[in-house]
Image 1 (cartoon, protein in one colour):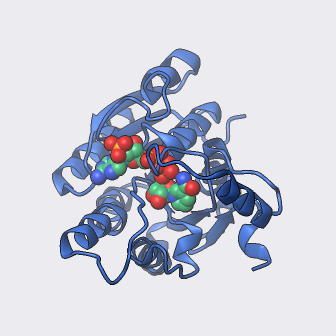
Image 2 (image 1 turned 90 degrees about the horizontal axis):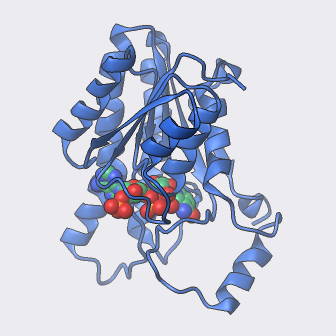
Length: 255
Ligand code: NAP
């Protein structure tokens, strides 16, 4: 299918997990080019680097750009790389980190690091992409939030605050940028099978409780977030902006 024919996308955190799933779905839907903007090339879950695999298996052009989203200059470089392929059409602010924390013990450094990646990285990634899109024919910005950006959770208050902020940023930018033909939407994944928690072990009891809570009875796969991102980036979503698309197997539908 060619839902993204001719489009050039920048995907932060595109080497691993959900970002990799989005990058691969974009290529499967005939995007012109995918720029993978991440700190390292090797996927945490194994396999060839995202950009190499896309180039080998599809007609989409793909390149890796070394980009730490907490560094504005890196974000500029990533977005400018899209100029080699006709300019940026889609910005996916996906890079993010997660860890549980005890609110009573959180240090300023821990707080700032998480906010810098999850919220500031998205804020300035959106700003830099929008500056280019305003000069061209508009575009689409997709922010990867979380169901934690819609509901509170005392087990990870800093993460929830970062993702809640990202949700409101999305709605605000949809309002601000609509006149420039820039659509801005958020995807809120539920529990997706990635290495975001590192090698942290989950007990069989925890897994069973989790799956019990998810009506579809399984974890989501990164490509399933990719499918939602393809939709939001495509013409099928031409009247969709300022929207929260929850992709969680029904987890939050009945709580
Ligand atoms: P992941 O497998 O850890 O992938 C995240 C990617 O982002 C990694 O390649 C990581 O690189 C990169 N990254 C981290 N910090 C970065 C930075 N400062 N600059 C550039 N890249 C950076 O995690 P994921 O599960 O795919 O998560 C992707 C997004 O989905 C995050 O925003 C996360 O909050 C959100 N999300 C995930 C879930 C889930 O269940 N997995 C649920 C809801 C929302 P390193 O490996 O070097 O850190």
